[in-house]
Length: 293
Ligand SMILES: [Ca+2]
Image (cartoon, rainbow, N blue to C red; front, side, top):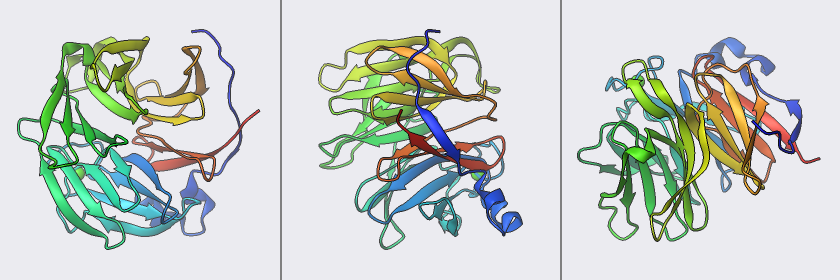
C-alpha cells in the first residue's frame, strides 16, 4: 500500500470504561458494540449493541446506549431492550431522529421523546446492516447477505431495491457524500457462517443519479464501517483489527491504527474533532481526538 499523509492523533481518551471510576458497572453496558453515532443537537453519542455477543440472532436482546460527549455513559439502555430489538447495527442521525438497522428493517426513533416512531420492515432482506441519509432525506440501507442496497424514499419510506449486484460483495458500511454513496464491502463470502472471504472487500463510490459504480480501492480488507474527517475516510477492517485511512483525493491507503479487536462502525464528530470506534472483540468504544498536522 502506498503511504499517504497521515492524521496525527494526540490522545486516546478511550477504553473509556477504564477511565471512569465505575468501570465494572459500565463495561457491562457494551455487548458487541456495533456503531457509534454523534448527535449534534443533544451533544451525545449513541452506541448500538448486538447483545448476546457477536450474534445476529433474533433474541430480543439488543439495545442502544447513550453517552455524553466524552463517552461517559448517561443511559446504559437508552432504548431497545424493552422494545425487543434483536441485534441493532448501523445507525445514522438527523436533528430529531435516530435511524437504527435491526436485521430486517430500520427503526425510526424520535430522539427527544426516546420513542420508536416507526419500523420500516424491508421484505426479502436477509441482513440489514447499515443506513445513511441523503441530503434530500432518502435513506439508503445495505443488505449484507443480499448484495443489495435498498432505498427508502423520504415521501413514503416504502423500501425499494435500489441496486443489486455481486459487485457489492457483501456491502457493509455506508457513508453518504453529497451525490455519491460510499460503500465499504466485506468481500466475497466463502463461508457465510464464519464470515470468511475468498476475495477481500472493496471501497466503492456509487453515483446516486446514474448508479455507476467506481472502485475507489480494490481488495482493501474485510471492511466493516466507514466515516469521514475532512478529506480522509476512516474505514475499519474487522478481521485484521485495523482502522485504515484513505486519502480521498489521492486514493491511497495507510494504516491509522492496528491491534484492535474486531473494530466496527466508526463515526466522526466534527464539533469535537473526535473519532469514535467501537470494537466487537473487547466490548469497548475508543474515542480518539484527531489533530490535524
Ligand atoms: Ca442480540
